[in-house]
Image (cartoon, rainbow, N blue to C red; front, side, top):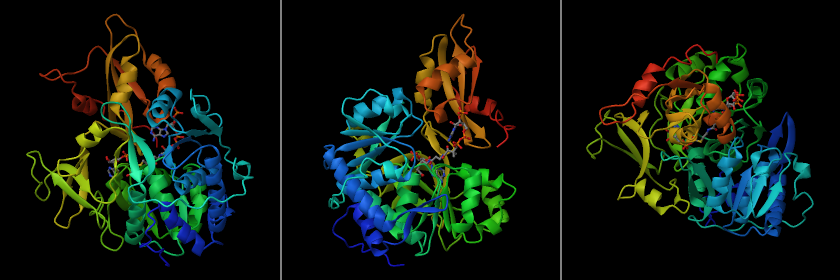
Length: 508
Ligand code: MLC
Ligand code: AMP
């Protein structure tokens, strides 16, 4: 395909997209329910008008724009307009509750908050400008703006977005991603995955996380490829559009859900070139069943919010079940074993990484940034990995206390802090156990306070207002006390083992 010039001295990631779009202005950009809503040429116009509108609200280069909005053509244009105008885009999960949003707004100090009506962003206390965004592009607040703002040039280190990611202490940190991070990663992925001039992407991921925003959306923009745009993952809708697509990206839950459909077969995938999985471990059984049913081997890759995409199974070489492949070109990984030395082949250790993909640090948090890097500048991922002779990485565990449910990260500490604040609770331990649909399901083991009659329903009532739906325990188990070791530390491994079959019979 006609790849855009990569020697462009303007490192703005939007400038890359602009170049591709300008070469193919008539190509469809977003296709919704079979209707071509916008061409690439119209995308350029809309983003230019939306960027002018941002300026009219006082959003200048380097200002933060926080967005809690439904996935829609309008929210895609808003994102691209922020890149174009040099503003820093901060997307938030649409299921975050008001109590969770308050923290992000205080930390990010945005100039502008954009929310969809009906989401907590509409009502959360906020002192600066707030705008409601309709999902209908024709009703966009920039619809009547005539002036097209030229793309603001950016250098590699300029921040483009901040993505909040929770931590083991229960406090979220904003990972600052630069224009250089985003443009280097999309270019390396387009090359590694052999992006084609005639590719059509089926996009069903949320766009408030790295996977849907920086991997899926960016690759299509870089290639000026049509996007079959779904506002959420829905089996029936995906099956309808698959025969028109060539590339699909998803978390493992997408693949297990597709496999649960008896009509999902080779014929539906006849045009498909590539299925990609990431954000959580893909089970060998899913990989194998998928290959049997469709004739396609899912290409699994590994990444993180702070690092974007780091490793990938090869496009041409063997794609190995249970492995996330070697590091991508230009990105270095190493595995540090217990003693602090690099691990031998096959020996597990903490995965560390370095490269142009790496975020510039946590927003206004140099201490945490320093804590998560080694003295010689490697980022400490907290994932436990092994490497084989061919350089293929396997993620075999985590040193961080983290649950990944349906591709969303849940930090037990954050959930425990909410539960521990409930009257009648002595303490709690939140764990992840195997779940047939979400990979891991969140479970709270709650020790009642002496004399308390607290029930799982009491816990559910509180978490339903304090925590986003995906973080809420699917089950709470009330006990008299939590198991502890001789040092007094709660034995989460024992709890995970005790409750490992809790969801075994839950239908997918
Ligand atoms: C929804 N629910 C979840 C959940 N998603 N619970 C646990 N884990 C999840 N992931 C809740 C719903 O609120 C609902 O609760 C109940 O579970 C059933 O909902 P559903 O209708 O079945 O869920 P659905 O809307 O279909 O969403 C499931 C999903 C979605 C898998 C489609 O979670 C999703 O799109 N996940 C993708 C996450 C993602 O993009 N991650 C990338 C992170 S970036 P109730 O109480 O109402 O019954 C990253 C870097 C990298 O990690 O490497 O990519
Ligand atoms: P996030 O902070 O949401 O970006 O999540 C990043 C984490 O997701 C990583 O640190 C891993 O633990 C996990 N992850 C991403 N991709 C994979 C994968 N292919 N296999 C296993 N874990 C993964």
